Image (cartoon, rainbow, N blue to C red; front, side, top):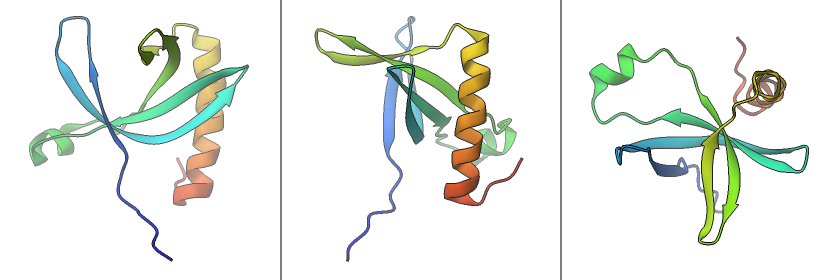
Length: 97
């Protein structure tokens, strides 16, 4: 049995053309949409230590070229998704807030 425990990494490009690298922590479907929990990946240890430890919730939006990820604008949905992701993190990683 060969299980790959390597993190799944994704690079996103913001509106200014700046690349940001994230680890995909988890994905869920909610209300017929797919959402991603992303955690920033840092190139140097100083940035990692200074990080607040927060993750980002992004919505997958279908495009002609496949899909893109966008910020979730609705705070109520973000709150609901956060509860779901936190529960899954606790089950998956033994993480408790």
